[in-house]
Image (cartoon, rainbow over all chains, first blue to last red; front, side, top):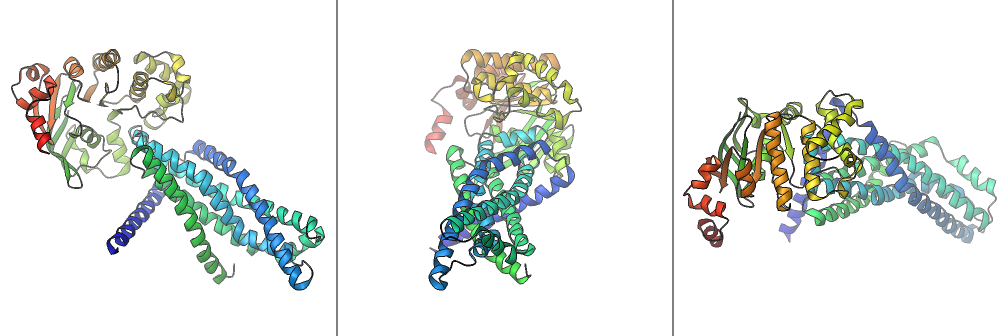
Length: 258
Length: 254
């Protein structure tokens, strides 16, 4: 059993080292070679379009269920569904917005990135990049990292908006909270630092998703089966890391008063 | 002139290249023969620096390219070579034309507006019409994929082309067309070629020199005529394509 645990740990360390090396290499090529702007734009559009619908839908219903649960619970305790807007907006903007967006982006766009790069790896297309004067880091990884870093915070903003709308619909039409009360509960208690809290998380999740998905793609071996394994591995790693990182980020950001 | 001296490459405990010594003459076609898994592709991947060798030297015009580590100098080393991948390795997210023009922006000073003319010229060199440029790689047959891949290599004007099993998986007629193309490249532009193959018909037709790679070493190097006449039992068995002989006996022991 210890051997098995050792193997898993070694594999994990090996992959972490490989991913760190890829990030270092991305920094090197970003500073010293041309930026693939066309690829960056194409990837940003693809990631945004791929993830927007699912992000909007998940956030809308998450906002709705948050309002329903909070409203019912508070109603049972105080006899009036107060502060529904505050609870919904705090939960979404500080936590669920970036987390849900991260999970959706990892599952949709992240998986697509790993599958695409992984297929290129097993069909020697990555080697072909070297033979034609560029390399996978410059041509594939950097534009995708840039695209994730751009689109994730934007998608998180949309996620927050849809979540708040969902909460509004339930609060107003199911719980009977006046619309202006719901909105004033948000504006009174939410500050710039709450948005900053969510934004920082979105950026860090974006960087992590881009790193994991690109690394899993370029390190794919073993044909179609290898592509499947890499893609599943990338999505599972991203989701687990999002949830784990979310706790530590919350603790660190809270320590800095954000 | 490319000179390979005492080249070694292992994958874990599997020693693929033990001690490879080989000279590639400028402007000539050198074929490297060997069975499946004998390390032929590993050898040319080491030449292209897609793999790092574990020891020995690869001298290109007298300079050892195995010691180059700087990424920009490494790119300059690779610039010397063009590499025709076994399955073509065409970028499937691009059209044929975009594939052919891909290396131009990285490796040449040709302005973008001249790319269509280059695409047309290179496709014509491999016997394909201009209209093919609009197709996607998935719409091409195996032979066409290899020809488009060759056009992509020719577009960057390398000094030496490394062909990884160019006729494998093709019908006999298409194999012969590809062999003719390799010969044509030598005659028309005097390009140096290294061809990895186990297609004896093609090797005898196109080669100026043949090297037989066996157990990680070059067992025999010579002209096609010398290969036809050799009494080396290993090479004889391979050339004759016989299931009986020392190679088979060794495989059985393993």
